Image 1: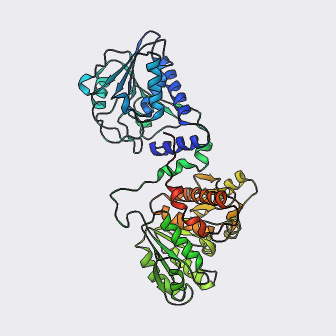
Image 2: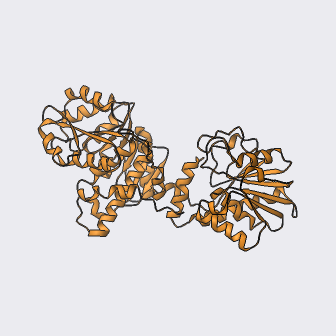
Image 3: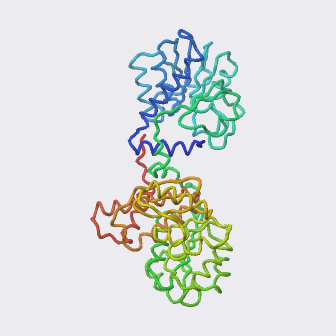
Length: 480
């Protein structure tokens, strides 16, 4: 089962893999036409009621496969207001071929007539709440008619995120949905056909540009609404926590604070005036710092622990104590990873090991990425946390779902790129599910590295990645 928003991600990932939305719309329309044939005899009247989005576009395609019927096509609204290029092209195709089309500018102009079958293609998976005019009047007319009602993807008025059916939703007799079922469809008192429209399984497995469509930023948001991140790092190393913190800021977090030993706080601060420091006494993290750090961490959306901390026994004991008592979301990187298999915690952890660190944690790896994906999924289930295992193919798994990233290049073996990845993951985990945050982070950092190498060649350094992060995260070059 996929929600409407997840289906949007899959559609866009399919386009990134070379299966464009227009091709998917053609397949969807053909599936709708196939669903009509068992419920209508040739010559019977079939009326399409189409909205101005891609749901309507699917039905406009179907019209071209329904020549054996007495066909009528009603468009709710002006043709100029059709919202996508591909839906508009399919409307234009009907005009050029002189199919019987009409436009309904307002609810008072709607005359459904007495069709044998009505195809409900008004609103699809991106709509929430009660139907508004003219769709509300059209739904009432469908529900009161004697026609058999076939809904496209979901009945108009079904919220495909929650499964809630609006009070004035279309009461479908049949539903043809695409690729996978949607929330709410199993609860309908109507048969549902799930049509294969040619979306490859890879669109759900590989992390592609469609995953970026999960990101949004409320225009009315205030400071802190888009994430507050605490980085616990530094001591033996100073560059790592600075890279992580700057990457989190470049990934959209509103506030990023660095908790580090006081003796290196000024040095870390010197990397950027954007960093907020929360120093603690001494020259390394130790167990007596944990109570205070836990209080600070509780006020943040995400904790990142590990960058530059080192592997002193006292430091790793402190990391174990901190994570054991933490109940939020934490990204664990570098030497801090070694404590994860041995702790019990209520926290949602995103662990970001390379393959050597994975082995040190007790996991297994393999040369073949498919076999490695299975091994990572099994180990993620064993530890009960999300893993982002870095490599030529990044493997992201929470033990139930597994994603594979294919961005990145050999130039990214340079030190510090993992610190950048931890920062991006931490920022995204403030506003996304841990698995999705890790997947988007893997795709983003790899894509940034690819851009830098394409521009400058090998020899990149981790700081080269920082400024490119926003342009990848917020790219909006999806198909219209």
